[in-house]
Amino acid sequence: MDLDLKLNSRKVIDKEFKGVKNGYEPLEVDKFLDIIVQDYVKMEKASIDYKKTLEEYQRTLKVYKDRLDKLELNNAVLSKKMENIADNDNVSFNNIDLVKRIALLEQALSNAGIDPTKIK
Image 1 (cartoon, rainbow, N blue to C red):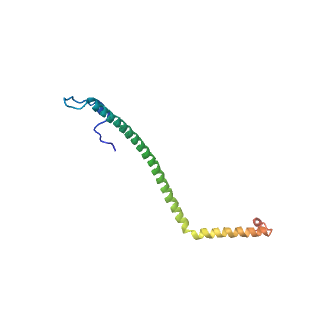
Image 2: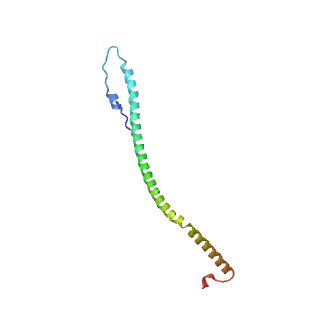
Image 3: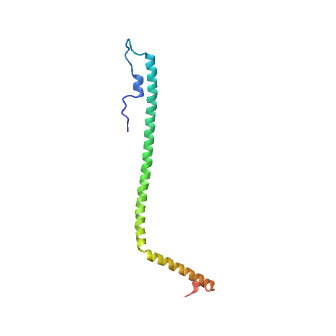
């Protein structure tokens, strides 16, 4: 987004006016133009700083967009895997229940003084 400025600080400094009999006071004009030049210098510096900042933000944004794309891909893969697990919900819960029951039975055998690993 470049500003289409017709002047810059150098053009203002180098500008020479023709003298006229009933013209303006040259020193007053010169002081005013000095103020304009100072403003142009500040604007030019700010413009350069803003462009650098914008470029930095654009690089950072690209990094985050790349990360987001990777995470969305990983999410899609994991969602697909979860669909397969969801299809087997009953089997998964049955297995968990069985493991819990086995653990309780082993505990009961241990409490009764029987080593569950030696049962055949």
